[in-house]
Length: 65
Image (cartoon, rainbow, N blue to C red; front, side, top):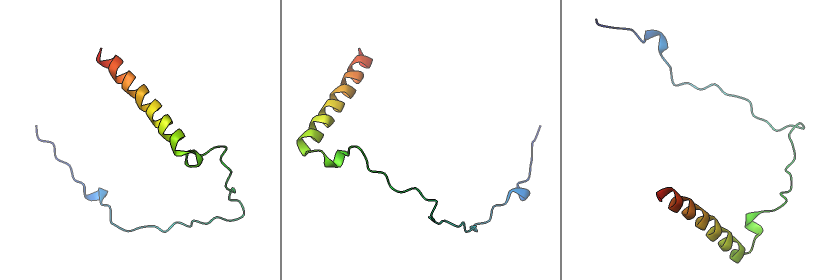
């Protein structure tokens, strides 16, 4: 049994609808972050990266067992 259908009523034309975007008085001010990875010393960042990597490798090792 052949099934045919038409997509004539589903045409999408490439036009855009402009949307207003403004930051008025109701916008929230930026909040100070309690800590930032960019403010950490390089040695601390490297230690954290190695610790995360070791944890992920432990998960892989346990999954392969």
